[in-house]
Image 1: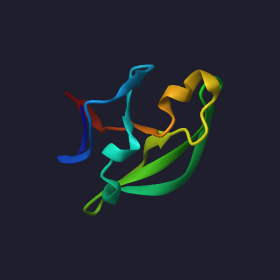
Image 2: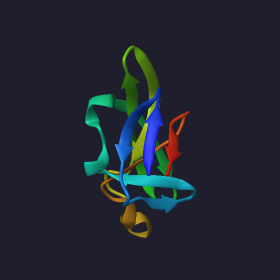
Image 3: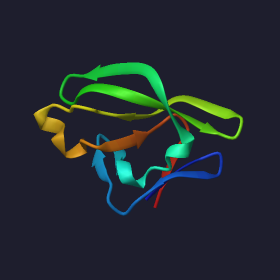
Length: 93
């Protein structure tokens, strides 16, 4: 699987976990040069508190387009250390 935005591969791995239709990539699969820490957070009742990354490619910015759970609840421990994408980021096989 590959996460692509602006014709740029943000992450690539054969080891994704699908939760609620979203592919969670292992942190080691990320191309960190395209990710910036974001101040955004949200709460899921069963996964816990999510943190976000802004995606930056060239002069284009996609705010909070990637998220992860730094300390997921027990029910979501399978996605610990993994990142998912949305907001126009395509995840393709």
